[in-house]
Length: 108
Image (cartoon, rainbow, N blue to C red):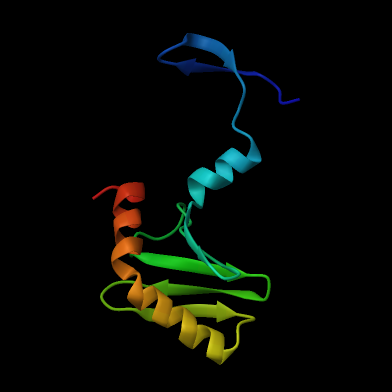
């Protein structure tokens, strides 16, 4: 059971004990999933740089693609070239959806 921590909450009043967010709730907020494709998860990581990008992870590895000024592989680990080519194609095809999600999540 999580320890209740006194915090100020507008709706509850000052120093009302509330339960801190679970690790899962925290991860959902800071790394929301944009979509899934096969065994790949496309997501953002909120506590990172402001340049628009998307992360991709799978059981075999991970990658990060810049979305602006153009689609470009920023980094990858554990994924084969053929996978990266396919992932880049998916990012290109769904870039408007990804950018819309980015704007809703980060604002602007």
